[in-house]
Length: 107
Image (cartoon, rainbow, N blue to C red; front, top):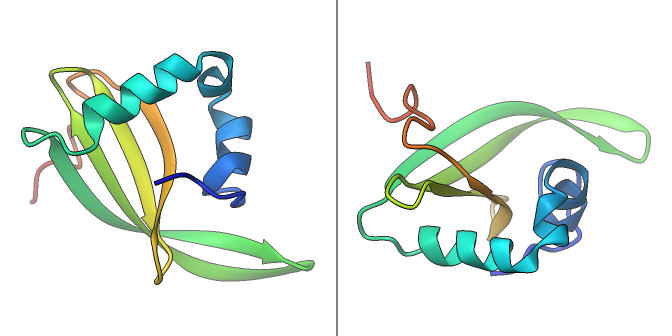
């Protein structure tokens, strides 16, 4: 699963703008993916988030369908977005054991 060019919320463009450390140290990016994706003891949160998309000078409201996988033991996470056709990798990050604490519970 490789990110495409994407835009503000997905793909290479997002990674370059918000997660430059993954380009500086490709081994870090590979480690984050290995320690998070497919982890049977990881946490999963599925969320819907309102966002604004820009296309050809027009703005429209969209719903981001986001899936976050978190490995508390390795302190890593991966964020993916579903666009209605495919699941796209947004980023992989270091994330402490308390990452997403509010999102992991239902109230």
